Amino acid sequence: MDFSLTDEERAIRDTARQFITREVMPLEQEALLRERRHEPGLDRSELRELQLKAKKFGFWGLSTPEEYGGMELPAVLQSLIWTEVGRTFVQFKFGGEADNILYYANEQQKQEFLIPTIEGERISCFAITEPGAGSDAANIKLSARPDGDDWILNGEKTFITNGNDADFVIVVAVTDREKGVRGGGTTAFLVDRDMGWRSEFIQTMGEGGPASLIFDDVRVPARNILGEIGQGFELGMKWIGKGRYLIPSNALGIAERALGMAIDYANTRETFGRKIGDNQAIQWMIADSEVELEAARWLILRAAWTVDQGEDPRHASSMAKLYGARMVNDVVDRVMQIHGGMGYTRELPIERWYRQVRLMRIYEGTDEMQRLIISRDLLRGYTKIGGHLA
Image 1 (cartoon, rainbow, N blue to C red):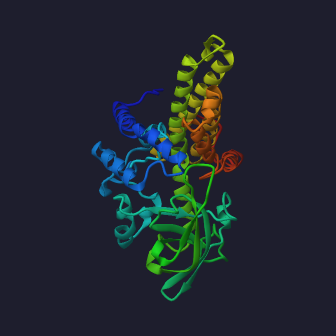
Image 2: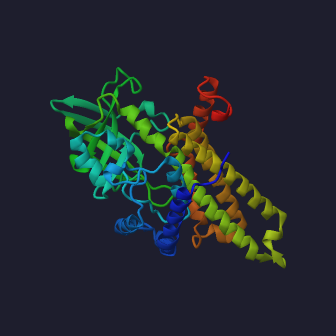
Image 3: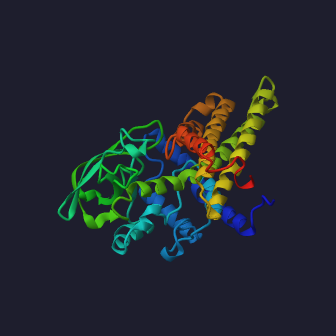
């Protein structure tokens, strides 16, 4: 069994690391300063400039099909690159991407929504979560009723990432309540902001914030249906499922960087006449962090490998997200403890990570939902203990 990277994987990973180190990390002090002033760490134009620089390195559209100008990388490589992105707290991501379910668009919709999103000319957001339907996505209420050749949307979505900046939203609405959400009673719509929906900023413990989206008799033409009528919930689950190995991949980068900071600090900070790294309490925190980080790494890479094998990745991805999200919370907590009072200040990124990574246990499937999926798969015989090696 070979756990090493191929020469291609290592070369691409190292190039991504070089870009993050040379082009993004130097912006960190300015980003921290801005955030202390309650400003975005990176504005939209600066993000765009960085993405275009990355494009010159060859990084554009990690998952985007080659026919749309993307790299169409295997899942394992995407995981490795998202880990590198996680090493910096600057809110950067490589450009050339679009929501995976936008590829279900027809040709007219691709020209209007998909391609401009890939090229960075438009910003999208995806909306399925509601005030009464978070983990229970099957309980959505936002309705769409037919009116001639149009549909009228009414209701609210909440905790929508990019909802404050998006030019358009992919929104899942109930179109046939009798069929139920899981029975084909929902449909996805592509809705431009100028059609009448509005966003309201939600303040959170993290930097930036999601939005509530309000639909009050928003009229949407039937040509803006994404996919087919009744396919909304299915598309929503495809959208959510994609992130379940990428989120913990990003967490790996955060944990690696944070643990590196803790090791450096333990080797230089002195108390009572000796370095704090000589204390067993500090050594054990570092050791536990390393063990958990490595365990998470292989769960995550296995989930990505499962995607590349064309197998159903849901069980492996749920294990990766559950463990990876918990791991990074524990590691960052220990790193703050090792740094003491300095770790609690906004002079270092540690307290920022502390707030940021807490969300990883909630969004795109809570810890509890991942446990439900994992246990259900085993109890119903969908998978075996030991997975593909069973």
